[in-house]
Length: 482
Image (cartoon, rainbow, N blue to C red; front, side, top):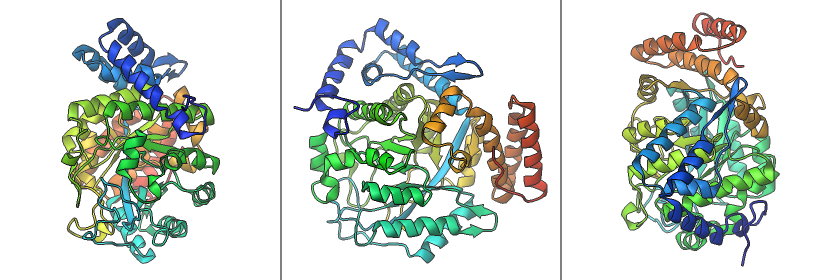
């Protein structure tokens, strides 16, 4: 029997079933242990250190106790501390991105995804490089600067060379004042050699959702295709880091398996990356199973309600305080608003989950991977974020300045990341306001920028930011960054 070892490179040892089950038993036994819960909450709280803050984070056992806790006032305290942590390290900024679906050809048989091989009535499509360019121009015309590219697993239709060509095309499109400055990649688990190629192509974060950490369920949900190999999939992040990619993004598809089991596995995966590579996940995504062609979420009996979903996000923020947390347009505007409070730091906006969807005037549904619940325009999302006191940020500076992996995390953990992220967010917001915003959003945005400039502690940084903002407005200059 496999023995739990967070430093092991074997999936069944760093995501150990026996350890997860023992953790869940421990959490159930202590879910009303107020003294223990208070100690865990106090440990999670950010502590002032010099000009910044530090956070201890939580072990998977501690985090599991909080998730199991059903005491209303303690849950509310979790939410309060999650918000404290998010504000301490990421401020009131929310990074905006969009997914770009390149191809829905796929050889896997995943039971929860409409791209599965046996679905014969979904329209199969793969973008040509000219179509990729057209999609990018459409995204740039909205104001996007950051993309996450998506493609099914198909070695014939979607080989690594195709993905690399698409990345090259995306970075090469310069339309009016538009540029895509960061391309994150969400494709199937691959080899160290291919991860090196992705790194050389200049990707930002490599994202791969585990879907479920429960091995037996994983193999049942992936009955055919290369994704059936649980170990190869689960060990992908270690190969990515070996290949030089130091920013990786985790996630599970909540609703496939028992959420407490998934949550514990997710935190253990983050602990493993920290133990082996000295840096945890750059991002953690929290998608839920949603309706799609040939997929009925009611077929999965592990669905979670909104309140539980929000509690999961808060507990992730307490356990892995420095990670970026992502919520997509799978969720409604109402749920996304609630999730902002408990630690979300990135949102997608005006997403289309179909191949070639951005160049269509009407939202196409025939090649969608899942239903989009939040169908607001990017301008509406930007306006909504500002109404709720958040700075919409299109910043990509850290990745382009080499502040990735442990360099990003060291800045984040010391609180020093705030010295560059805050003015960078304001400058990229100003670019959006000048080039893409409606008059109402533009007026609202500049009022926010005037207020937020006052919060920059360094007089020198503030003066430079003010001059850059002036150049953005009056000289049509772009892409300033600290």
